Image 1: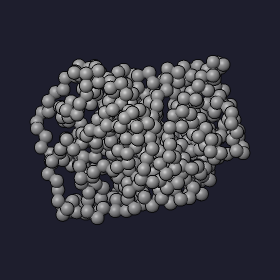
Image 2: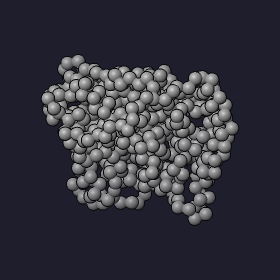
Image 3: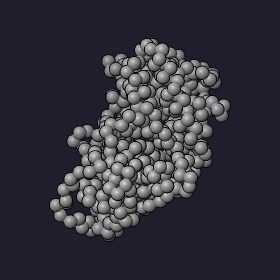
Image 4: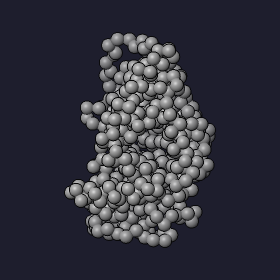
Length: 505
């Protein structure tokens, strides 16, 4: 048995009839490279079965402590049924991207079965040109972006011929599932450890409490953040107006910052990574600067079309991996987050790119001063018995008042070389992520080979059609290419944010 961390447990705690905690990816494959020219459900089952001993989370089953006295545990499922987790589906003709996205939206709007290991894999037929898709669903309590990539590295191969897989040293029989009385006793024994857990987290968490994601939604916190940063500057710590601007930013309200429904909308598309890197190299910035600018531009255009662009910049949460090298294959979550204003209020593409670069540089400087375990330590103060209620109530209250942030933007580096599943070549890898009350838009991108694969997840009640964001991303990259053609490096002088309702470029 292994106990969940307080952060892992939070991804379970936020779930409700409208909020789901699983993440995944939609991968499109060309089966012509596979033996027999096809990828079947039998091929998938055989491949996963051969590698199951290398994928411990695929066998982990959740065991709760009665009355919520302590954090839940993972137990290796003694009744594991592979056929339950690998499923088959098909999109109706004509098999186009819209139909595929609708199928993904429908599958992702269903919770995972908590009586089983928390993952599912769908083989989807009916794509154009004989292609097939694999949709994965894995609970965020089990993996983050980096550990999700570790799972993919086990499942996928670098050549159509596959790789040699050493058989397991012994047959997996699973663990005995403890009864309620046993878990109740274990939970009671763990109660004395809970205040100790909080006390251990206190020295690192208290000085950085104002930087916990969502804290700035409360009225007094932005002023407190300013005061703390001025004190740090007086003490000689790195600071400056840029960091103060980042830490005190408050999110304006938008159409996608209310209470979400139980339904999702998904859209996907690819942009040239080589083009993004050419812009990055020419202007002396980073790939992430360009990605955030593209997302800010797409959201800005979407809001302008509806005459709902706020005068203040939107605020995004950007997840950051804090997984140390020795934590490889530890699974679970080793993440932190930057809360960053993004330049949706800047009209000109070049100025928008420069502003994104400045804001992200300040956010990184601020984040570097924070403890890597901030999110885990902050959740250590919540007693397990009230964790679910506290998480849902907090999110619900913030979604009904001023949102803590507007959207999530996540950029996950992926492999540059081709990958294969049971011999079928993977052509693209579109992330599928999470929305919650108050944050009904998630823009996640994964790099693969020579392209960036974007997955846009929205709440259907707030954004009924996610495809315009993909169109706007393409337009935004074309605009940034014109910046490249004019040449010149990005200036680093600060620009005063535009006031009033932003105008079209």
